[in-house]
Image 1 (cartoon, rainbow, N blue to C red):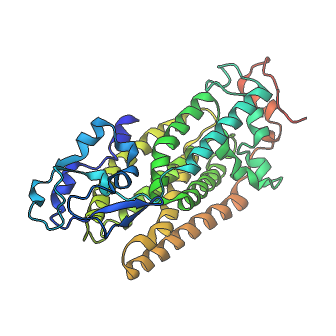
Image 2 (cartoon, rainbow, N blue to C red):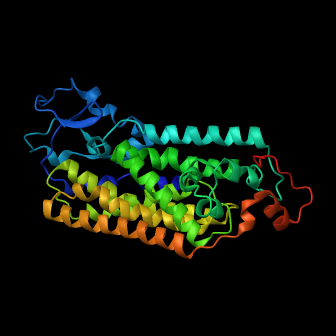
Length: 362
């Protein structure tokens, strides 16, 4: 995953196309703000100027992102520095990915509590180092018969907080704490949460439609939604004007992120073969993220006409996706009644007489 994440760093060569229209910026309250008081040779604000890129301050990354600024010597705004760091000109909406961190911590606590209450299943039943399937259902896994016949609609949301086991949890949290935190800092917590939960719900709905006779849990559908939304952002902002250094650096970063996103989609897609996780949930999250991303990022395209167009497209795709899936789910899906008794269902499926129902809720 490190190779995928490293692709998000913009190539230093991106600054070769910036030209001489260099502008000094500082960080004010977590946002980038132009500093009209900055003068040639004045380094008084250098601490504020760099503090928003603290995660890129390691020596290897700094050297990778620095290029010579000798070509700017004739620029009246040139401040005499020998090098310019690409990430110094990349704007974040906030300094920390608070929601990503809180979600990951909450998912870890839920996993620990579930295993403490319900125990750990043998590897032949749950190779992910997790509890028995009945424990997953008891704690809120996607269970189609309970959603459709008993009206437990909340089970379209709760799988986001559950994982099949420790290995499943570590994989998803690793992505959330790295890529998820970075995206949240770019987008802001509100947009991040809309995309995350919207994609998580769409993943659960498609899972009910395509795989109604299995339990499924995990935040990987929501994570796929983050990747889908990033693809939409790259598309919508591709033709955005690049009149300033910040605009050109942002464009370079997004183009460089494309490879990392595709790599991430491939890796998370491979997790479809994990027990109690299914391909339909991942596909539903990805499609949901793309549709919601169009809706969320439409106002950021830079032009009113273009923004209105993509807003309508995003709204139509999002509404069409959820309405069509919900209609199909409630009119066509007929889950097995056996899933109502998860314990007995998996006893028969595994053929293991030693299967223990530790959290049936009875």
